[in-house]
Image (cartoon, one colour):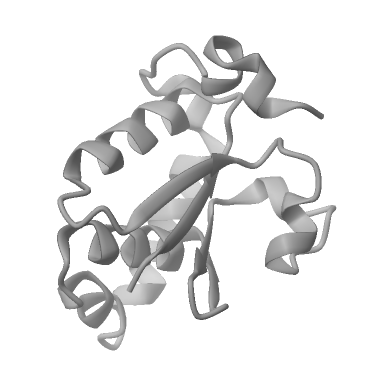
Length: 127
């Protein structure tokens, strides 16, 4: 499994999480791109009005996941095991993870972060 994780490049917490994922990327199977690149919503087939509400994973086979499912897919690809996705698929686990993801995403401005990607690499985030 390999693919691209699309993250909010204007969010310091999201940038910090992306950097952590890349440090975990022992397989080299994970690439990241800021969601602010033109045409990204169309690439994943997401509605423009809700695209920025969560992260997105575009698997190399064309499969698309969002929110907690995308995070699990990215971690699975980074560490080279399907365990995160297997756990996510257990009854009740994905519902809890999605609720937690939505809460964190809705409060991300209160979490510690780093310099947002689009601030440190503005040419990578052309709008």
